[in-house]
Image (tube, rainbow, N blue to C red; front, side, top):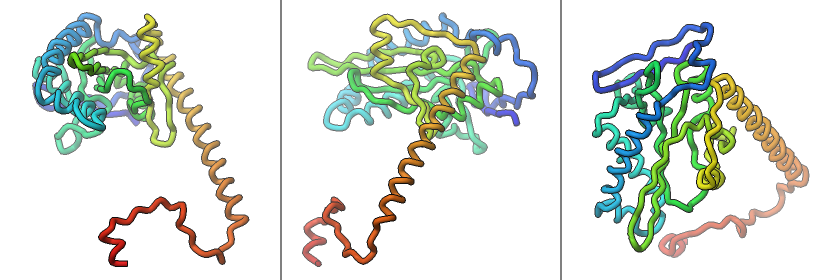
Length: 276
């Protein structure tokens, strides 16, 4: 069955129709033209201007202060970036649900129209503090693979914002990359089903001048399937290991022993303890 995406853009609701199974187009066979270099440069220059101003605002400085600021910065920066792109009148759309409201879990925070022929390209906005590593979730591997195989998309973009915070001020760094050009830095966790970015390795590679590794769509689809096979295999092995561990415990389980909560790490507020 084909994949259908519904978009809302400045002209109102538009339907991206289901595609019939057919011989892949020439665009699908080759390295995709995706978002043009001109449109990429214009988008990045405009967002850099917007964020150079935003980091000076009182609201953003307050968000960057205090503990556990990482999530606050990420949520605010991702929302503001979508607002900037929309306000600056770029040709964009949003995936919408049956309610005609934007989907809460769209593949892209925003879909940017570009390329030849022109199509909407999903962009996922990710923000964080420079120097803080981790493996942030990118997108569902299932959704991404289906969208490629049904010829709905030929690229998947990350708009990466990294904020350098120091006593002298806050600086915003912005990059736009097609993850299909950097699949060596993607990891798949079959539990939640998400592709994750190995951010430490990825940024180290870029800082050392590492170049993109463009693939054809056929090669991209196969690489994504390979990620899926490997992730499913590791998940099955881990689940089997945990099952065997439980069975080993069950073999020596003695139901006559008293309950022991010494390792339960429970905390009872004083008001509750006083009533016991």
